Image (cartoon, rainbow, N blue to C red; front, side, top):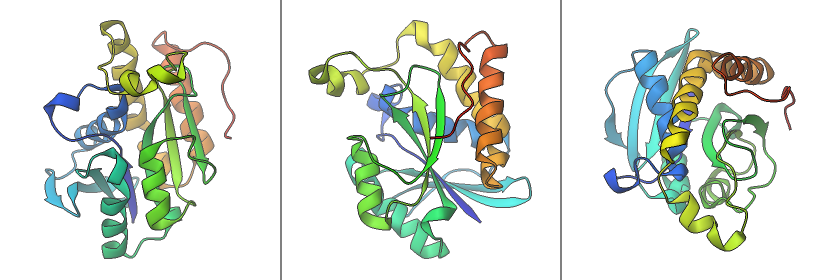
Length: 201
């Protein structure tokens, strides 16, 4: 069994924010693979299904971003999952828009959702880092991540979430590099790729 956590803030006000791309990714996985309807538990919402014959629980914490770890810990304890069986989908300022990196462990780069999760379950979970770009000035970061994607961004956001959903089974099978490469190729095919981008860091 695996736990896939999408990070974001609950409520219509935040639904289209850059900070909520993790929610968008797990929503698309649920739709694409016919997961059971979302239901409230673990201080969040979960949907259950299978990816490549592996049982997967999707989780959207409803604790707001800065307390995401509470919901993740509660779900992990219930299902008796170790950190290495948990994958977190997060927005990443340090990656260009539409880029994806997969890594296990490492720093949190100022991301409050990751800080909360690491404080509750340790650091050795998988992060699927979804590039949203950086506003260029540190003082603008807060308003940038809590603003909606621009209309010009919507094409790549939708394409990225679709590519993630199409290849999510690879994450359930620990095939991180293959997942990353296939998402990159899918984005290229849809006109959103740039340079070759194969590495896992």
